[in-house]
Image: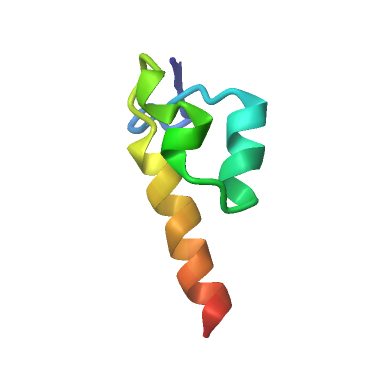
Length: 56
């Protein structure tokens, strides 16, 4: 796990193919996100908020 420059928020590691799959709209179960050892809920919520903003 990496720490951001300001030291406050940890940045989870995500495999590039998983990140690409999430951006393409592939569901988390298909990508095996649940098998990751690190919590990437911050990444997935960020991507979901981007989808909501794009739909407006």
